Image 1: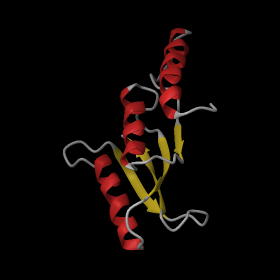
Image 2: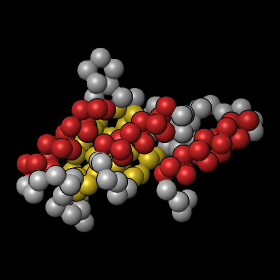
Image 3: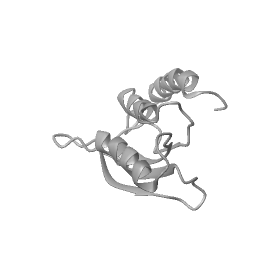
Image 4: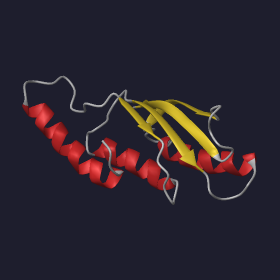
Amino acid sequence: MDTTIQKAMPLLVTELHDYNIIGTRRRRNYLDIWVSDMCVKDMSNQIDYFLLARQEGIIGKDTFFVITIKCYVGCSATSFDRQTNEQVQRLLIPTAPLARNIHVIHLFFNRNSERTIIGYLN
């Protein structure tokens, strides 16, 4: 979809609804992978949209995700790693983790201030 996440999310929800009406589906969600490389003003918004997609049923249990976040505060690797860890902790709520097998990596083509989070939804 060549659009913003704000415009795409309602379209995906409608498409999911239509997808589930046609025949019997084993799974409610229909996307098995979520790849996000958004450039948002507040990096937490990227995780917010990811969690909204989960809430809306666009993605669900066992969905593999790749989220590259851009850190805008600070200029050191330590600062970028700390900011990334804060977002990862949102997915690892101790009482009910939302994700598993999470890894944070700095891909070859990532800028110094970018980190990529990969894992699976619970």
